[in-house]
Image 1 (cartoon, rainbow, N blue to C red):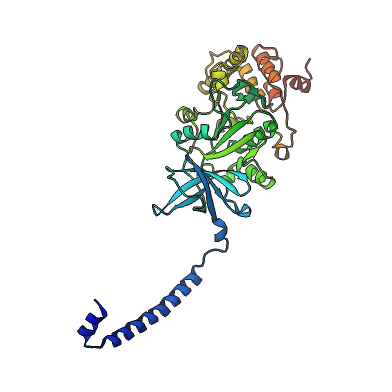
Image 2 (cartoon, helix red, strand yellow):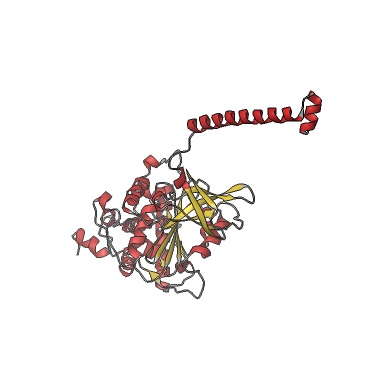
Length: 405
C-alpha cells in the first residue's frame, strides 16, 4: 500500500504516517545493529581468516593455479573452493603442488567453467578425501607431464641407482611415473629418494604420487611414512619442481591397489607399485615387482637382454611367492631360494632415510644391478644365505660382506 492508502485506512494524515514509518525504521536499525554486534562478538571470524583467501591466476582444463600469501599456503591434498559468482556456487579443487612464490596448483574435482582472473579462492583447511577419477588422470598426465609418451620420445633410461626400479620398472628420460601404494607403504619416502637421485640430471621426469586417505585400520599415527613426511616437510620437501623433476600429489584409492585400479594408471610410462605385503616382509622399498611396470619393458624399448632378464626375475619371484602361499612341495627348493635372494637383493638403504635407519644410503649402477640379478638367477651365488642379500648395495659388496671369494 502507498502512504496515502495507509493514511486513509487509519484516518491519519500522510505526514503522520511518514513520521511514524521513519521512527519505526530508525528503531529497527538500532535493534539490528545491536543484534549484529552481539552475533559477531559471539561468533567472530578467526584472526587468520584473511590468510585463507587467495586469488585465481588461471585455469587450464582441470588444472587451477591460485596465488596465496606465501607464509600461509594451503597444505598439499587440502580442499580449495573457487568462487563462481555467475553460478552462485563454489567449485572444489584439490591441492596437488606448491611450486613456490605463493602459487598453489590444484586439480578441479568437477568440470571447471571459464572463470575470471582474480576470482576468490578460499582454503578450507580440510583434507580432500576424494580419489582422482581415471578419466581425469588420463587428461592430467599429458597436460602436466614434462614430455608426452610417444614413439618419437627417447627410450633412454634415467638411472636412479635404486636396484628394483632400474631393473624392474625403469624410468624413461622425459617420461612420467606414478608412485602408488597403500597407506603406510612409503609413497613419500620413495618420491623424495627418486627426486634426490635424479633431479640433477638433464632429462625431465614427472612424478605423480598417489596418496590414499587414512583408514581406521592404518591411521596416520601408525604410518611410518606419515611421520617421515612431516620430518621432510620441516626440512623443505619436494612439493613442486626440483631440477629436472616435477612432482604432483594426488589422492589415490582407499585400500590396496589391485589389477583394475592399477590399470587406471595406463597414461604414465612407469608405475612404481608399493605394497604393504612387501613392508610386512621387511622389504624396503616395498616395491611389488609382480605389479610394478614400465613401458620400456612392456614394449621392449630397451635391449632385449634387459627385457628378458626383468621378465625372468618377475616370473621367478611370482612362482616362489605362489609356492609359499600354497605351501606346495613340488616347487624346486633351489629356484625358490634364488627367488628369495632376488627379492632380498632389491631391498636397499636410502639416502633420505639415513637419519631414521642409521644406515648410509647406497647407489647401485643399473649395469651392476642387472648383473647381480643375472648371476643370482644363474646360481653363481647359491653358496650365500638369503640374509646376505638383504638391505645391501651391489653384488660385489654382498660377497665382500659375507667374506666369500
